[in-house]
Image (cartoon, rainbow, N blue to C red; front, side):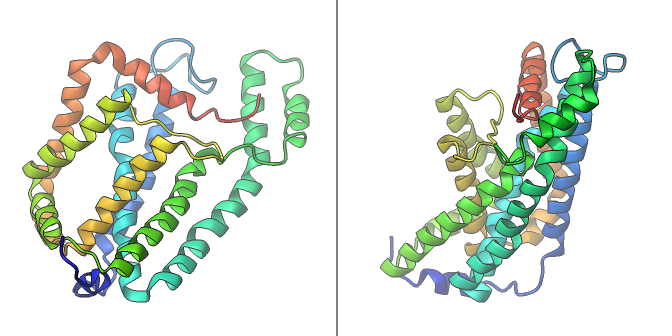
Length: 298
């Protein structure tokens, strides 16, 4: 460890223009969320969420859902960390936190309050139809009226976690700045690994696999509770920190662009290996993912 200007290390990054490729990637990740939740309707087998279509299913649905779910949110947090470091470099700590408040906290609070009653109504109505309720419309309206205050963050949980993580990382970096800490050798190694598809697979894949093994995860858990789940929060904090470190290390994004097809092939290959290794358990994993969509009061 050397004592050098941590923020100065960031400020030497050459990227001052908007990185449209990463903006586009964030958009793709959000659209893949639509694909994932749509595929839930076509899950094979019986039982599961009420919104599954009993007359239409495909064995490809679990593969699509699991394949997207495994990388979508970790990638989102890595990109958020990268842009967080960029914003810190351009504006400083207080403007960055104000930006996060305006871009994350305010919209999330507003839409959790606005969306909660109609979402409760829609889920209650769906359950009523499936269970042959006598008057599903009236009971759903009454149920929605009795539950006006959000019990949880619904599908906006990732924004909630991002707010927590943005504040936590800002505090950590302020400590680094205060102590004048930096690890240039670590930044150099991170850049070297990240710019190589195969080294990324070995290093980041191994670290990710060890984390899952220690916690006994078979898929990525989510939590919409107002009190963040510590292990999930720490996992996405690490993902965010990876993105932050990639920016500080001055990673050459052009290298990743040149190796895009290799990275895609590695990703598809990993999904194929996971599917082939445990096809009988894949459907159970995805049913667990589907259950997280039903995060509403009884």
